Length: 271
Ligand SMILES: Nc1ncnc2c1ncn2[C@@H]1O[C@H](COP(=O)(O)OP(=O)(O)OP(=O)(O)O)[C@@H](O)[C@H]1O
Ligand SMILES: [Mg+2]
Image (cartoon, rainbow, N blue to C red):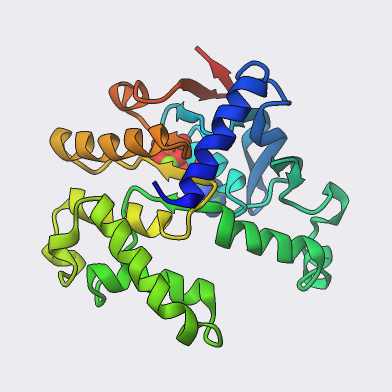
């Protein structure tokens, strides 16, 4: 286990010992408080999240279920600093992800481009979260290795890349080995099975050691065997202390998590 993962596992143990209940604010690492997200289509308003709350402990594996269109992807984007809610706040280790409610207008955001809020949100997106999507979103012209490496290149920046490249290549190779793809490094995405593509996406999401892995239907496009292989990876990550929030339609997949929540009418509840 790497130092980072050992620290994460140690923190998990501390959180479990020192935390309160699964929903207790004290043990929460990722927390959504009263988040509302409404889409506006012309004059029509589509309320999707309605003052939804969620608390995830460090090291916890939480699954979110809900019918199609219930807002699961929207919630994941709001949790991962990708989509600002109109109301409420998301906190990572007590740190707010979004600007205070009064400063979320288009105009405030435009003025806020280089502000502390925007920079913090960018930093969280880049360093704290790792995303896995149902349809992989790999770059077709790049090899497996390059697909993972390019995200590290972007994260590191052009100026620091020459000195960071060697270490980044080692981490990319290690991450692809972890997901069992060392024998496919030179393949392009269209030369891989769906399950293999998703494993590349998982390696890409993990290479920067995110505090939270957010996965949107990671097995939604896979057959049962490939889906089971993906869930075995998630369970190994969870055992090593990775915090995971996963959206799924599949009750068998959800059963791999510590806790299953249902999104219904814009709010989350345990069932
Ligand atoms: N950009 C958008 N503009 C307008 N409405 C949207 C937008 N994105 C999503 N919606 C609507 O918001 C609702 C929730 O969408 P979301 O994608 O979060 O649902 P979901 O639970 O992930 O569904 P699925 O299980 O099918 O992936 C849907 O009714 C959808 O039509
Ligand atoms: Mg969705």
